[in-house]
Amino acid sequence: MTDLTQNRREVLALLDGNGIPYQLYEHERVFTLEQCLRMPFIDESVTICKNILLCNRQKTAHYLMLLRPLTPFRTAAVSKGLGVSRLSFAPPDALETLLRLTSGSLSPLALMYDTQGQIRLCYEPAVRNTPRIAFHPCDNAATIVFEQDAFWNKVLPLMGVTPTPVEP
Image (spheres, rainbow, N blue to C red):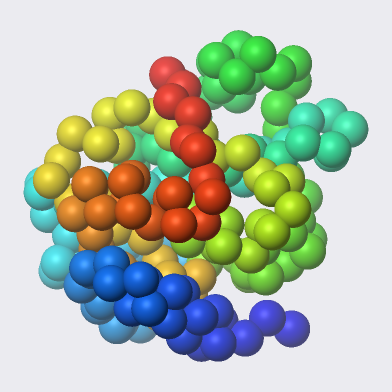
């Protein structure tokens, strides 16, 4: 069983150890995007992403797609944008197996656990249109808010992740 509080400690240690600025908000566990959008620190200056783990038909390639909260997810559009035929939602056990997560805690910060580079990070370009961006620190009882620049130009390179923009 995944220890989400341990995941949070490891994410925070990575950020703190590399001097990456962020704000941490602790809250009740949330399991839906609607719950996240009601948090008092989420406003029009912060994008909290819809995070979707996808895979190809053979389950040999995985993709983590970041979308704005109200953007409809269209598998065909994302598949076409990535040049991959027929993406689908990854099976529930992929969260635990690949990223040490449980349902509701999916976050691009979990890519620190993807040491084999099995998951490609993709994003809707519009998620970058606000001053700040928010994710769970691999624990859905907390949220981290970053300045956009810190996330894209410090956090992701630190984890060895090169994101791919995809129009949904």
